[in-house]
Amino acid sequence: MKNDLGLIIQDGQVVVSSRDVAERFNKRHDQVLRDIDSLLEGLHKSVEAPEDYFQESQYQHEQNKQWYREFKITKKGFQLLAMGFNGQKALEWKIKYINAFELMEQQIKEQSLQIKKLSPMEQLKLQYQVLDEHEKRLNDLENNMPLFNIECKELQALVRKKGIEVLGGYRSPAYCNNSIRGKVYSDIQRQLKREFGVSRYEAIKRSQFELAKQVILDYKAPLVLVEEIEACNNQIQFQEVS
Image (tube, rainbow, N blue to C red; front, side, top):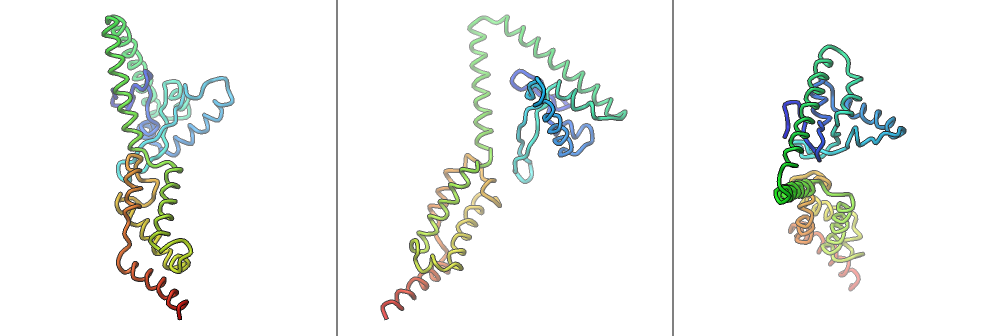
């Protein structure tokens, strides 16, 4: 459930995205992020639990499909953050948000009371349904997330291994030729990025990781590059024979 201010119910708690707050209060999102980071520094030094105010998250940009920081802000976090927003317009938005937080919190309480009226079997079925939906959302999120750093390094290692194979082996004449070796590695990387329409490894989705590895393993060098590699390797062998 999401209202026109961007408030949602997450894990039984009403929160709002820092992006929605930035938009409503006519601020740049990076400014709001800096304000929250500054508040978190103080919260970490206090007895309060920072996650009761701000919960760091990520969102995927609709155009470039990259992932960026954001925060899910609770009612307490919003009240703390909005203290620094001044002006008549800001005051009007503060009132709207506080009223919306209270309304949605009341709806949660009412729903909780309705659930308590259900029979034990009905409550159990509802719990299974919620868990199943939550698991699906987590799987979707994980599959659409970009590759972790360790996975990018695994792809890089696989590119090097494939490059050595294409060049005729480690320390082959073609491998020792910096120009040819660079062409091979660059071509493998271009092929990989072209397959997924990305400019860097990190932009490949985690759900595509195994497919990305297979693309590297299936790589075939273009004919012009194959001829250059063979010519280099054969030329050295010919000189050794003569």
